[in-house]
Image 1 (cartoon, one colour):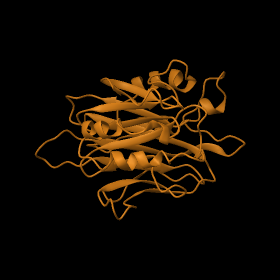
Image 2: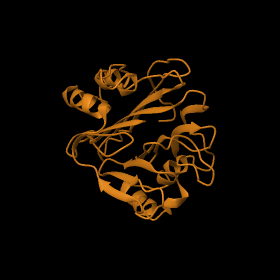
Image 3: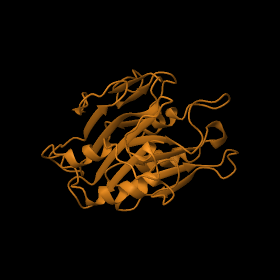
Image 4: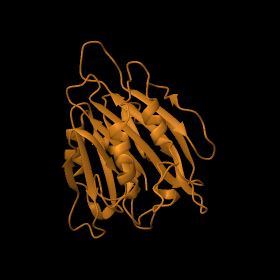
Length: 253
């Protein structure tokens, strides 16, 4: 159950902030965000070594894309394409709206159910493929201003213990300040092992089960508004498994 936290504030100098945790089997190989794809030199994203796609990335045009499994759909399955391909397909486009127009016409039966976010410094969208038959297609919902959270269910899902516990904490936290390099409050929340008692350890933002499933990494991406001062997006990343490594700026930015 991966987690994405979005802060949309269209009039701000940094109108889009994305925080993301990747939950996966610790044994599944991966590489941290970089320019891994020679045929896509404009893409900086984490590499899923097993399937060749990504779970979260950013392109040089300032488009962010991330993929999350829906409930009960962890891992690959015979007869389906990797959902990580969709992140790369979204990052082939120069703005979020253009990417979504292309993605919404995909054949959903090709993929296991997913949630996806696609955003830039103007727009943000939630793409939902929840029907295993593909009959309902891919639903697209604009993400509103303010703080939103997404896991394996619905946007701001009241059924998610993680969202119920952490949404108010993100609302109360100091937002990242990319200008000054101050992202401490959000980094602390993304790394938190605190969970509501009734949820158990997996209700935390960062956890590890006895079966080896847990939070592999965290990321923070901040997008500046269009301007003449040539400010660039900020991309920060921390690895938790197989061993914790400190937050760092992603190279290639």
